Length: 162
Image 1 (cartoon, rainbow, N blue to C red):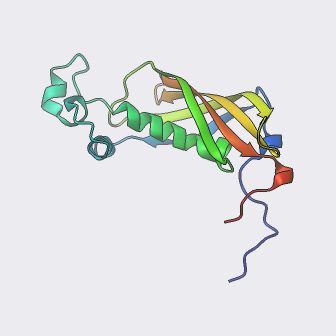
Image 2: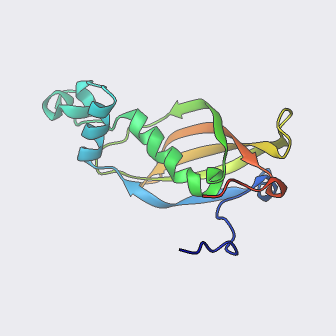
């Protein structure tokens, strides 16, 4: 099989980011009860708010909550195409704020704004991109926000080929 080397690699390089640039990540993702239970059990989170409808019915929410680790993972995944498809590494997440509950059946959406772009001090031809991401439910309620930094190659350095 011949690989098409003329097709540009998808994703952004360091030069493609600018402070203030915004991305509306698409598509949204509806979180199912099965998603919630499977993720909770896979990650050994046995809290009954995620997997016991009878227990959750007696809580202030009246129904199961989606595991916040799952919502973070989904929202982070939604940002990959726009922010980190070419990233070399995630460098960190900070200021993770969980501001509203998410329930099975909710559809989540995300948007990010570039808040910092700078060359790496220790790695020539690479730089650090920091974004602020905000996630909303289908009704517009913000349920999560965080800052994320990743190491991104400069275009002149190219990127590893698949």
